[in-house]
Image (cartoon, rainbow, N blue to C red):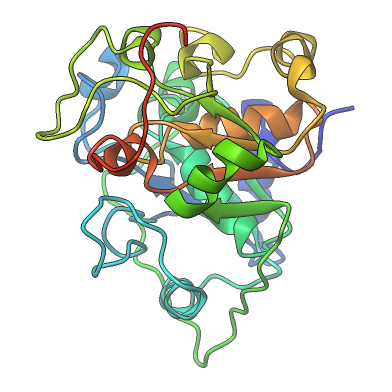
Length: 292
């Protein structure tokens, strides 16, 4: 059976939403996230419902509020102290059930899921299909995000979970020799093979040696829903012999693969936070092109 606290269907979400609006529903938080520099155009239904949000949603800004301002790379995970402080500012408590959605279906919601899992949060779920699915169902929306009420005192506690860990380039570089972890790349096959130039300046084309390609779109349907459990198991079962580390362009879609692998039964997952934006820009690090 897949984990019960990683995805939430639209039908189950309606029950959680009712709970969130009841007097006993203070432990459910709905987090909206998005990307300023996301891929192409958002789905038509989202663009035709501009400024539409699920009621009670608060903004979780992983690109600014929860990103390391000292890093030269985008989206870099903050340390545990910064994470706890910012979670407190949003009124999030460790006992909350967190429901995360984005406006693509799922492009960056899994990133927020992994961030919270790495900090030891127990019950954090992605709304399968995200805002597009919610809008297609004709459910009620509001035209502004909810203003969070900060915790009165510091209450959020981060306890790093080794089963969900961010790793850096040194870990990946050392693994080239150690070969204890299998690296899976969420970028398109063209980028992985080095056939498509990178859009960021001074970033080489290719992939981390000995890594494998699984484009994130291949484990979702056209609406951003994860594929059924058996289909995900067929993708990830061949890699069950070792811990998995996921990479992509900037540490975002790698988390889609990470969540899919977790659903499929992989219990130890890592995300290379700097991903290809870091590796490809460092000429001292090796790369491969083609199928090598």
